[in-house]
Image (cartoon, rainbow, N blue to C red; front, side, top):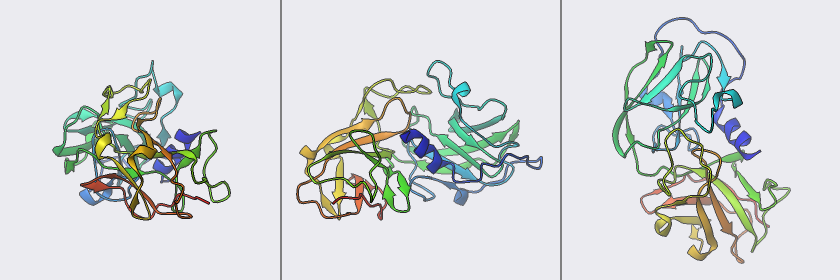
Length: 262
């Protein structure tokens, strides 16, 4: 259920099937974005990137069960012919359309300067220069500014079903960096894996850091590649409906996301 919601966040464009004019794919540095943070920038290995443009694909299609073979993520969706290369490594394709393509950056990439290039049925678009950061924390949003989070019974936290002080909740994010054990390129994770920088990781409620002892887990959310979860015990003195952010001393998730708490 949660990954379906995350894919819905990624699939921001129309899902109407249709063709595109033949020709070279068109996109620019400004139309390559982190779709979860909603900014051009904040890219990291094992995090999501969206390319907006024209003639990116001749069809509209999202990843489906047939694209997953024995736990292996696709680098081309069946019947599309769309590939995205980051530093010449094929990214995992989640969604393609004539105007939007969503990918997961290869986990084997390293931080530093990189290029991203889309190829549609043999026609290559421009190689765009980007910078990969070690981490690019971003929190999924359910609707409006409410972040994607759940009670331990799996029900979604909303304004009508808020978290309670003292409760353990699960908040979903991406871009939290390497894990132990490390993620395997092109593979769905089959078990929990904590982030390597757990000691530096923080969660803030209305700008106040949550005590580290209340962050029970921060790591991969199996079996979903690129999806991280934060198991958080809500402080007893947490304010109602606080802004929630997560990240590291050098990079935080964007402001504005709300966690409903009563």
